[in-house]
Length: 390
Ligand code: NAD
Ligand code: MG
Image (cartoon, rainbow, N blue to C red):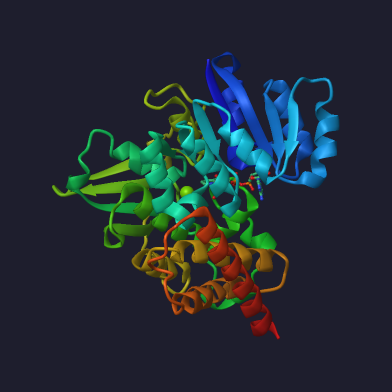
């Protein structure tokens, strides 16, 4: 029996993780499941999987969670401290799948307890990559990337020497607007941006795919996780989303990871690592697919990519600023307070403004310094967007 916890259990990654767990419940002892607003889902999964504890991040929803769990033997808890407490409970494998910067603290706590951390929460690496990797090394924790591209790179690197790696190519579907007239991008709606051509994911990451802020995050993630330099990381638009990433070696070979766009592959790989086990994902019929297409990403369609290049060059707390500005700009877009194209402009300005302040690049990355940079960047983003509108 392996003791496992799933942070962000009610989300898209969380539910896909539980789908795999439910197929072999006898193999797992579920410690903690966490969620935010979907109390009914959280309670029902916690009861069905006999979790030790269910945690909602929203303290106001605790009475509801308690009621839903009454008589089940599952503990109910709420709030940020409860999330940390749950992350400190001994577990062999922890899924970090909270969305946003909120995923950092529970992930770091789990790392301190030496667990194997399956990392879907890309914001952790973007905001605090050096801290996360150093803590993992210090506490003997293995981090397994769950983002499909990074799982693909990880798999292509098995048995390889990093010194022989020339480049890492991250593929991008191009998102909802890959063929949309660029001059009309300012007018697209939230509903249009929330439809992904290939992947079924949470709303925030889907909109981030349309703007390629998601890819921008993934480039930074690649630098932080694999320790390569920004100049070794490339992006290619691949509309079919079947090749998830490629690794180029010094002998000219490219190792590609090919599979259906189904997150249960990357999640299942991390769940069973270092073994491979049968997974319930579609088997590709290459003859039926016929062809794979590639094109270079257009800089004016996807300004987020240039911002990511700058964030990688500057380092330090620039990633925390970038992520917070991006999260805030996304909130503003979803709430109808700014246009789709205003998001990249706001993030660019905020990164710019904060880089002109001393010390951002060389600051020590701690939970506190990340939190401060995050708060400042969010406030500046709100200010910038309000000013642009006014
Ligand atoms: P989602 O929105 O579907 O789910 C997010 C989860 O986080 C939910 O359980 C929600 O209750 C919880 N949550 C939200 N706000 C919270 C807060 N403030 N505190 C604590 N918990 C909170 O998101 P998702 O698509 O499953 O993505 C989760 C993470 O995985 C993100 O970092 C995303 O970038 C990454 N990721 C997702 C996919 C995918 O296919 N969905 C692929 C690669 C990486
Ligand atoms: Mg991805």
